[in-house]
Amino acid sequence: MISLQNQIILITGASSGIGTACARVFANTGAKLILAARRLERLQELAETLKKEFNTEVYLIQLDVRDRAAVEAAISSLPPAWADIDILINNAGLSRGLDKLHEGSFADWEEMIDTNIKGLLYLTRYVVPGMVKRDRGHVVNIGSIAGHQTYPNGNVYCGTKAAVRAISEGLKLDLLGTPIRVTSVDPGMVETEFSDVRFHGDTERAKKVYQGVTPLTPDDVADVIFFCVTRSPHVNINEIVLMPVDQASATLVNRRT
Ligand code: NDP
Ligand code: 8X3
Image (cartoon, rainbow, N blue to C red; front, side, top):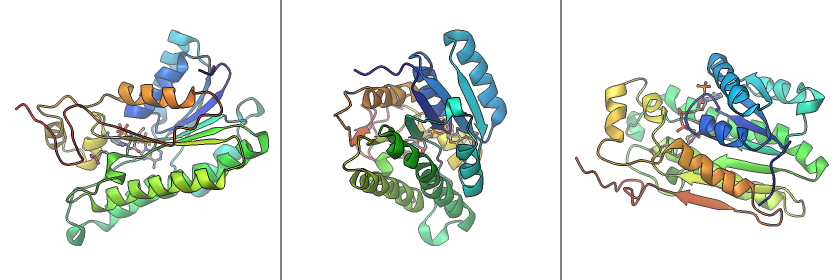
């Protein structure tokens, strides 16, 4: 297992769910964390907690990953002590709506495509050249079971996660000959704000998604990411699919109630 002491880790979507769990797991390793999301207040609260609990050095970026110029500015203006990113965790993402394709919302589609695909690409494009130059680095993309199996009404979200899977594979191919690692971590059902966001704040509907099952927790996913980034430098975990025991496929879930 390699040490993460003084490694610089950039986590997008750190204000909630899997991103926050990653920040907590890595905060306890001696790594320095760059945390990015739109909700700066949440990041500030998280940073305070991590400093208090683990004495972690944290740098915050209020960032909408859909804004290419903002991503470029954020990465190019990092102070020298923070600029040499070792690990990029492309976690920011969301689903919007659960509609038949022919009845879907253009705004929902654009938000998902701009965040899950284009945002991930922007971060990758601005961060990876530095990794290539320094001859070290690891990119972890958060995909989904939705990128392996399309489910009814999941159309565009599933399409974005299939794209993440293809992009991870493409990046791995293009980085062959460098020591940079690329991993796609693809969870099934994880209880986070994901369903609240999908259903535009309809909390009752969101709660039903997790009713009668034991879903994954964000910590379960962060644990797997920790495993991937701490393997020996010659080992690349290409892809991991993790699911709750109560889930057999994107659509087949064992509900006890
Ligand atoms: P949450 O809604 O809890 O967290 C999503 C995070 O993404 C938030 O921190 C949010 O921050 C950030 N985000 C969303 N849009 C943007 C944006 N435009 N710019 C910057 N940050 C953004 O959901 P999860 O933790 O579940 O989701 C994390 C990732 O995991 C996503 O890629 C999701 O697709 C994936 N995933 C989730 C699963 C699940 O069942 N929950 C299963 C499989 C994959 P803010 O709003 O502050 O900007
Ligand atoms: C999130 C998991 O199955 O709700 O990517 O799409 S699912």
